[in-house]
Length: 274
Image (tube, rainbow, N blue to C red; front, side, top):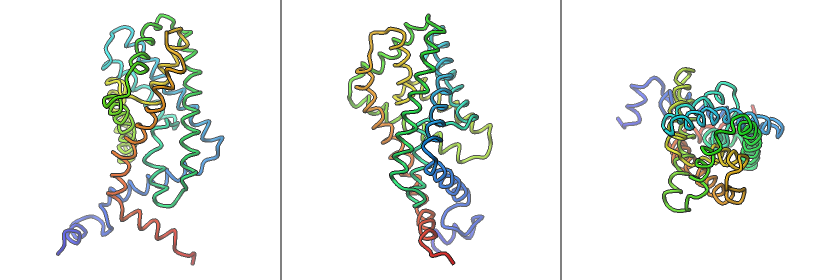
């Protein structure tokens, strides 16, 4: 008996992959397809909320960082933002790698739908977050030095292997968060995953195109010696390597693991209606 035949015999289903992966795959493709087929208005509003809500986490992070100068503790405080995004059903740009790409691979969406989702969500995240960061800087002017120091960590980083790896890890961490949340039905487990991802993302100062852009915007609004040209010089490669990290290190491997299910989904789409 082959290994695959033995797995099907002893497993809880006789499908091409384990039952847990099959359920997770179905959920991932379904939600990915829903995201791909949103209207432009829905994409923009959801992205605006994502930028606003992650700024709440940044506010908590800055408060802790200002008082303790400890990035690890500040990373835990930032988890408020990711929990808010999860509970409020909004999105960050880097959450739109695994599920929409899985839907495109299963032919439940097109690449132009993916491009619309990515561009719209990223732009709306930045606009919503920028509005909130302007409010935060006016409410807490005493955080200006903390914001300046945080922004300079990113805009003055040279484009070298370390910066590339920090951006790759930023994208893969957020995509792994999406994968973990799709792998469980427990709200508690999903919130714990948010806390863990926030600790890694903000506590280790990984390069994240949205989170760190909002820190830079806050520094600009506070009058720090950084400008939008400095932000763009960092932002373009952070976006590119966030995508590579999320797509190559997490999404592509997950799709490879569920290749049989993707083939089945494609076959079902190609069958003529009865």
